[in-house]
Length: 289
Length: 157
Image 1 (cartoon, rainbow over the protein chains, first blue to last red):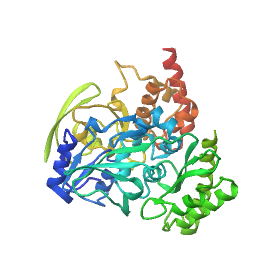
Image 2 (image 1 turned 45 degrees about the horizontal axis):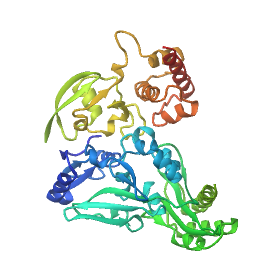
Image 3 (image 1 turned 60 degrees about the vertical axis):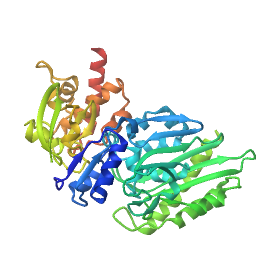
Image 4 (image 1 turned 90 degrees about the vertical axis):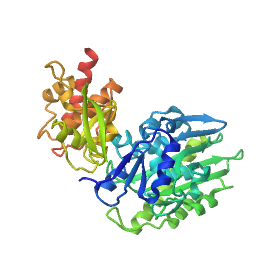
């Protein structure tokens, strides 16, 4: 399969890349790892006149900790995150999820920024970013703006990013002490998208009650989905089996999956309930450890 | 739009003029005429097109040729050095790790990269490393044995 013709651009800086996006508008698309875009072009599901390759902009590749926030350059590849001690020790949810994203060869190319910015509800990073309370930094012709991950996703493949804007950085607050996170994903085989997956981060207060709950769902709605009801029911409560079961039930209720070859609507909602229960328990154990 | 590119293929600098949309696997097979790298699913699932880009195994059906400009690409043809097979190639023959052989070039590129990163991988780590390479003969058992065998040989060398 061969993509329809396009022009390839390799800007050396982010500003140059933004300039190209401004010049070509809707006819341009950012090429990061290419693990979604190139298959889309090859299958002729989409076509763009101009690809703006940001994968050689070294300034977009970093993982650093600063003032209680971990900042990840959007061009950082999944394989680099997988090997980052900072990432895997401070964010167990990412340690859980990274080895389950696509396959190792794809993770050698695929970037966290591409995974987040594509707006594909079957991607794993959006739900994780929402559960962790992350902020996404967009750079465009008018400068920089910060968007909470929970408000980034508008519709299927539609995000807050405006024409000319590029996702430049992901900012994740370091979780306070007595926090724990987890990702539980059901998939049919390596390389497949999730049937359903649930990202959780819990923070416990001094009394042992839950102070903050971040819960978000992958691939069970047109967008990544924050399970707001499930979060609310947990805050202020001691996470016993009953509270976890109720939160898991509410997470499943929030899901609005469509039936496809991965399963029926009922099956997927039930899987959300099961996975949410498991993710909550794992996060709780980690918070208490 | 055409691009003049320069790629170091198995250690030798090669130049080409390519269309933006040319895929790396087509550059390797059709422009450079090296057909050791196979095309299978052509949708970045099966891994038979695996080559190493600046040392890292990637699926060359899902990389543009122009993206390899100024970088090194290693293919299965480069494993043999001075008439001597790579220890992984030897191990594949000794442990009967190939049946039809179609997945073998990709398997060799992925597993030789693994051993450079991890000299003593566990069975689980080997299985995870090759999880993006499909063997439709389902000969995984002997592939895993071959990787273990090659690891032993390379540690002893």
